[in-house]
Length: 388
Image 1 (cartoon, rainbow, N blue to C red):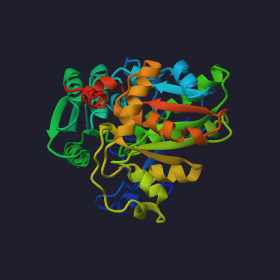
Image 2 (cartoon, helix red, strand yellow):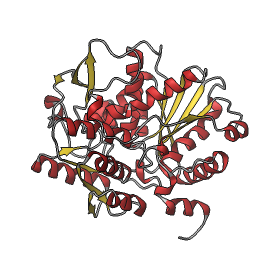
Image 3 (cartoon, one colour):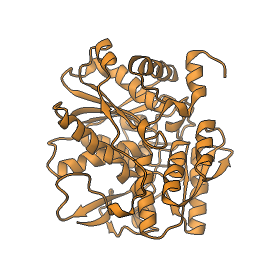
Image 4 (cartoon, one colour):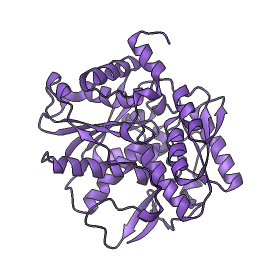
């Protein structure tokens, strides 16, 4: 197999090398306070493996830490209580740092090791930071994270426990993103910033392969709907990328309906999907994000254009939910299944709850649970009416 990057906008091809993040001509169109232009995707030429997930980094470079292969399981009580016999939970709280983001960090760490890179830098609302810190610890990499000072304390503690350097930013994720780019550009460190580094999308596609394989092994058929907690749109694009690969390999016949589940207080992609305008004009000026679901709170969705293109191409949907609905869904999910999810993951379950009556009962519905509730106890306490 021969791998390269391809621009999702213009089709230009690039080698997969350190320092290559965006398409050169497309990124020159970048406007301030707008989603990234020139997003790259990893593609292969030649024969792919018959089984497994095709990835652009050889297996020997991955650190010895058990990322991925998380359970897809049937929540018996939820299925009964909601008359939903084909509801499934994809439980990525089982990843080492308790987050879906380990999938991207795993591939970025392997790339760094292959190319002799010693330091990885990123901005995060918390999960990507703790994830890269955990995987970086296993890989022997120096990790520097720019994290909003308002991030939940559990996520900050994770970063420090794993031995990473934490730079607290008195501002938003978007400001942390810009500061981290300034640092990586100045020092030559590898940026793991979501969407900006194409491998963050590529790593997250692995969940789509697992969903397909696990449903097939259970004799349950193919995924019909996948509910994805959505902030900047990278998990969404990664899930789509996985199903695109499965389509290319002939393992599926069509792309499932992917739902972008967004908090009402941070819903730029959902608004853009409904907008009569095209491309970047669909996003308009950024709106200040405010939601209990900190992991999907972004003013400017960095992967917004790319994710929006996927949603439109494949008939994807968006659903917005209030903070009250998110916290109610968090409690319902935990009490009905035994799975305690953080608010961002609960947004995906809340999205399913909101639209479930519109879905056919014979279609598999997979809800991505992307982070453990132990990452944000304060929000859970708020939903229960408790003081912490």
